[in-house]
Length: 427
Image 1 (cartoon, one colour):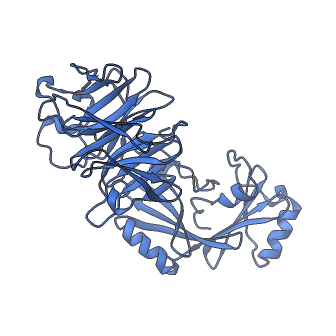
Image 2 (image 1 turned 60 degrees about the vertical axis):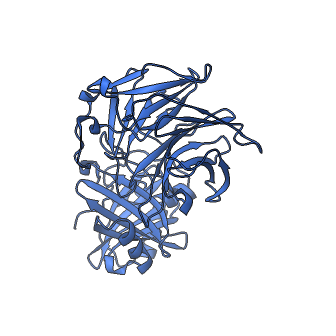
Image 3 (image 1 turned 180 degrees about the vertical axis):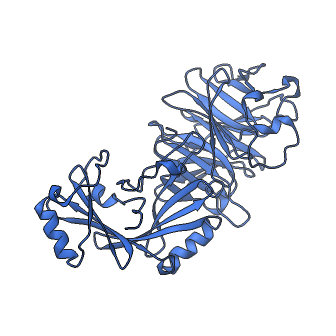
């Protein structure tokens, strides 16, 4: 018998049975399978003589072949058939699915294709590969993406595992795949900063217009625009209570007081950073009632360091000295990045945020396609590579109160800006 399918898809079990999964047992013999399951299997597939059985909690999986192709049927203990999965040739994928793959994953190779039947619905699961990175995508017949998952470590693949497609395997050097994805409207193609609001909507800014765009994640549209200044290079947004703060690349800080009210007020605080600083990241530090600012550029006086600066919300003043210094000796040169003009380019923060529960600082680096976690004394504790096919230019970062992470990326000349949600954040 040929190698077993790498994954079995259990969203039907999750939706129908609500069972909590545990580690998969070794291959079972038929004598350990409930009679109701065996009877149902024989009724469904009367010509099949050779079957391998697996069990996980109250689920029973039959693995077999028809016409030399792998099949899997998943049953409840009472014999109810939850799902049927079969390996198919990629030529049998619907044209709508093929079009989506060519549009969004053109650089990946198709490894396997499976057709899944459950709850009177047919879906298609495609395994893609690029280097050491594997991605599983599930589409319906209309070509709509239903679920996705990533696994970058091939040794983690289990030949007989019962792994839900929605699990996100995150390794120390890879962020994994997002749980949710939003394509942004044309006015947010150059989205440069985001902040999740208490009502679940997203406050966004973009590079060119002096406006806060409030984007409704459920309705998938901009529901309000709040002007605060003329055209300019706006890079980050942070919300502190009733007030929103937006930073321009030269360090100028715009306070939009009562921004959600009908008549918000605007104040501007001028900074005196070096011309090379290019501020892009802005985060609210609630514990110390201050804003933290991260530069994409650098201060030549700091030599082999980059700094995080602060703006006191009590005094409404910039603090004269950096509050965090980051030694560039900690940063490995990116494997793939644009040609670096100086040693400072190894780290070019595009966004900064503080985690709501761990209090760790998170730094996005759009140029080098990376995400860092950092302590408040400037020690980088983790480095994760970003998938450029998913995040073309990651400029915005925010969290909800439970720690789910949102990353916003600019679109290309023809592509749209996007927001991706990672429910489990970094594990």
